[in-house]
Image (tube, rainbow, N blue to C red):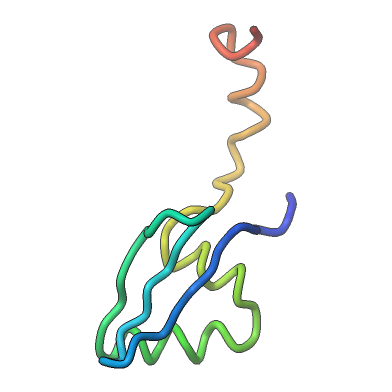
Length: 72
């Protein structure tokens, strides 16, 4: 499973955090959730943003690739 990529975050002056994926706004975190995210993002920023937005691999990609409608 590859590492997540394409995520960016920006801290606003009001303390909120905007998380984007490929230049599209995904979510805005405010208050305690923003502070918790910032502490989580210090260790692994891309992984933290993937977890906080729910945009991460779920483990079923290989099975989905074999499905008849996805074979092409």
